[in-house]
Length: 433
Ligand code: URA
Image 1 (cartoon, rainbow, N blue to C red):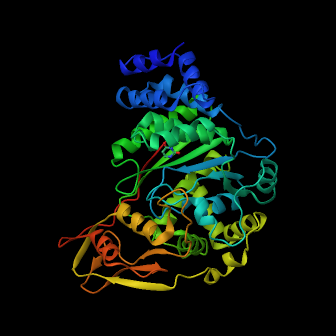
Image 2: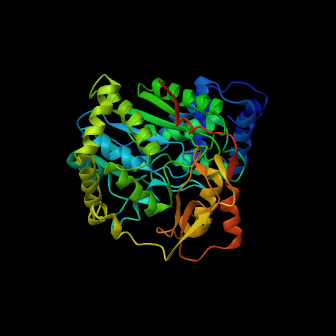
């Protein structure tokens, strides 16, 4: 078999056999196929697509390119959760503890921030002492002991995706549904859980800009999961504005702690309760989403979920006093209030612009070598549907290096106003299974 023939076959819109897809992934992972041929093939996939069988085969080949985590030593149905990424998305920090506190083992491997989107690992590292790389043996032991572990992906998990993702990033082949679906699902499947809850986001701050594309991506991933016998569901959620109010690492951890203390923002809480209800049903704790929601509300009210987060932080070497007393987190030197020049209902709030501002304040990486400043970011005071009077505070900027006029203008440009009434947006449009 020759790679050049397979590039041509896909370029001409023909179907590839399972053997041909195996040849491509095995060859690329083991450096027998060079980057330039792989990028030509992935560009052909962007134009011609892959059918259901080809997408499932690609995912299985990528999943088997490295280690498969064995979670069989953990009793019970293990449910994993994955978000396609957004701004202010601290769901895992709330969802993990509330689901685990209901007795479901949550063994989660998370990622770092990408572009304007934050990453759970960067957020967790704002807790002093906490480490995110632990051995597979300790990972399994921790989930057995406290039902919850959130760690970084092992270096040997899905090496095909690591190489392909880095190449896609520089060859304009990221936004391609079969490639995104196989990238996400191969990692989730290699991470060993029995069931998967996907939070597929759409809107300004998400990879998928439209709800239609989010649904196609969700359906593609559900079909892949089902083809491997895993119960897979997906919430389709709105990322046209940031989730919750906080953007930035320790600010988001504090907001997650507030939510576990029963006073978090209503959109974040609602997403966690809806996604969590499905996870409890998937884990066979109950067959009713209504009963599941009540269980989740109870573990927030009793502080059991907060204690579960403390147990996880302690087990991973972190100082759980910060969870009990969030005022201990290091604060930025300055908090600057940004006031409105206009009056009206907030019609649009560009999540992408605010995510990029937070990154430029030092909360994210502009190059892979950048060191993250955990204390900086943004806390929103006005969101879509709120009425704003002139001089009302729109948001607070937490900064260690002042605020340039350019960044101030970027922040103001994220808000769009209307004289007419604007309703608060619906957060979850649908749950697909
Ligand atoms: N997240 C992933 O893991 N892979 C993609 O391709 C896009 C988002």
